[in-house]
Amino acid sequence: MMDIHQILKQLPHRYPFLLVDRVLEIDKGKTIKALKNVTINEPFFQGHFPHRPVMPGVLILEAMAQVAALLSFDMQGITPDDKTVYYFAGIDGARFKRPVEPGDQLVMDVALDRMKAGIFKFKAVARVSEQIACEAELMCTMRSLA
Image (cartoon, rainbow, N blue to C red):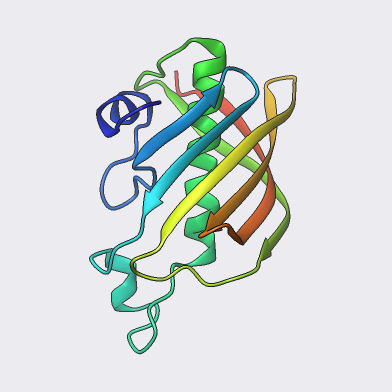
């Protein structure tokens, strides 16, 4: 379990780009479950779409990547500093099954598939009320800015 204060210590993202509100479960080095409360106050809803607000798919993928980063940091026992950035290295098999709308609670399950040569590969699923909203395989890596 990780609250917003602990998440802010791990992730460099801030409003409006921090897309994880709470970690519900973590099985060190294996899986993580986290949530994002989706509210009408999100800045992207003004333009996507004014007549029918929908969370952009790329932001759902970004939210899952932020959850994956929390799992990898926990697994390695590190807190990243200002000289470390966690990047997407690839996204495979992204599928969107249902829209995510204001008032939804996006629950993300991310599992580490493998880690090789500094590249992490995760299987990620985001659900709303047990219905799959998005699923994808995410590849991420950490880089030093030094």
